[in-house]
Length: 296
Image 1: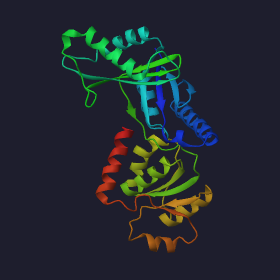
Image 2: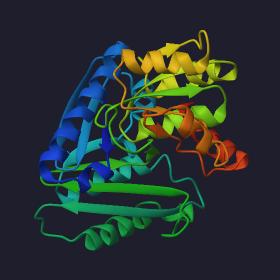
Image 3: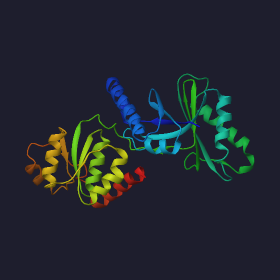
Image 4: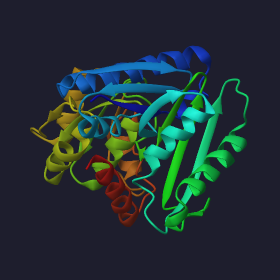
């Protein structure tokens, strides 16, 4: 049975209308390309602020969607008409198996369009229906630290119900902000490449040492077609050659504050980026662990 996923994006919505439309089209193309590479048929549609992806293989689809740059979160949803009675009946069906005895729950509602109810009124009505339907489960409403969140997004004539929200990488769609090359030899280099990809930069990599595994096992989860090159004869020469080949706008280096002046002088007119320059090794490790968890 086909599963429907509601895909949210954040930063794109802050752009001017023409830029937003272009970024949204790029995000759609990137999602379709990821599914094509994975040989997963899907259908995609959009409204103002959301994408909807329909795919037969739910688990694989979710993993792909939550590693697409630009996506802030993904929920598998049930789609129903925006009628209070229908919303309530379907939400109770969805919530029943999740509300074990002693659960603390919250109903989170969002509404776009004109309806004969407000978000707050709908949330109160649905919360009361849950308590009324399951009186023997010792349920409590907890809006601060719920164990179960019942999410209801009313968007015009259609409403989307879900129990989960999986985080994505956020940022901007890959490919909207030019081309870079990056040196990846360790976690600092891998994190720097990731952060520039997250800003929409198509990034090719020169990899060596532990960076080869980090690029293949983690970075390729976010950019499956990323180009990898060996540091032959040296990493600096390989970066320069690759930058010329892909007409890169700049080079990403894993520099510390102390190393930056020497690198700036050595690279001449090349534009240098070092997004981890202000991070301690401990901060790099923590941030990279977050990236790795997202990719898993």
